[in-house]
Image 1 (cartoon, rainbow, N blue to C red):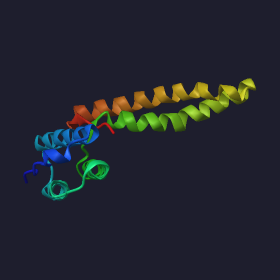
Image 2 (image 1 turned 60 degrees about the horizontal axis):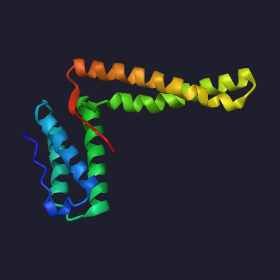
Image 3 (image 1 turned 180 degrees about the horizontal axis):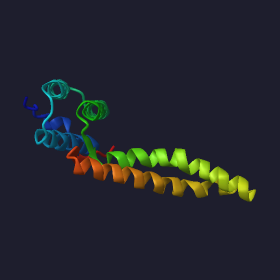
Image 4 (image 1 turned 120 degrees about the vertical axis):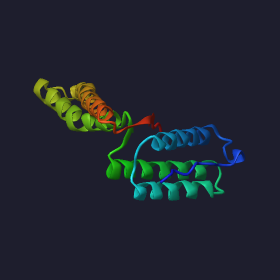
Length: 154
């Protein structure tokens, strides 16, 4: 099944952020056209694109619609087709590394040295661990052909 083209009227794309989200959507859909996805997933994506194409929202409301629909489509692709955007795992594991490794290591440093002001030392360590794990997962996804040729920036 063919993916529907995204088309918004130029007068709706007056703000820079809205235009950037629109371009990001275009890149996502172009990348999807190169991948083989199931007809069911393509149909759901086409429904979301049609909802955007028929909207008359402007400015902040349009930005919110584009973000919500994009997040939904990306989570659908990850869940159903195992496809992810560039740096998806890196971004996800960066936060997990901070929370799962950085804070506990900082607390350990602070308690062992008797100065809780050193709690911040663990954060860059956890961030580094998270980035390393996420980057390796991104490389694996790329090697398996599960990575879309688009990077999502919010």
